[in-house]
Image (cartoon, rainbow, N blue to C red; front, side):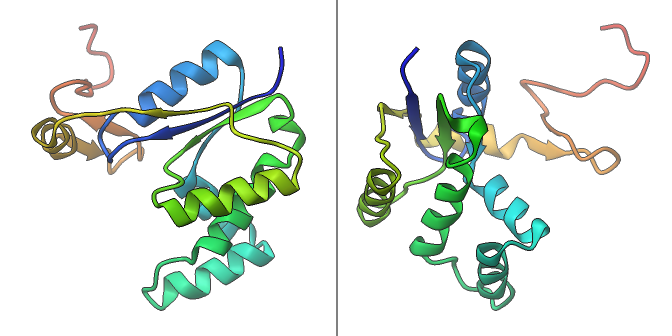
Length: 154
């Protein structure tokens, strides 16, 4: 199989994560949510992670060049040699251009960008029902994926 580099676009709650997980299983490619990349770099104390943390600690947005650098670090790893699935970036034309330039430096290019369109009402419905388990930290939805008590066979 040739390299498959995908970007998933859409608003929060559109299903990028769900579709990303399905694509990850189907194509056996790493799935990278940009928030996860950012948190991992901060936790690992990488140079770019430390830079990003400085912005975050001030309450500022992490600049595009830092985010593109973090993404480039991740997709340069051997696990992404056959491709990757990127969720949550780019969000602007400037970010798309910066990502494209960095991919070109790496000798790579996007295969496709997949836009997931969802109505505003549906996004509000989906996000409004999201919950995080305080005990175990997993995310669930009160309507679509309600969590059951341990031992409940339903």
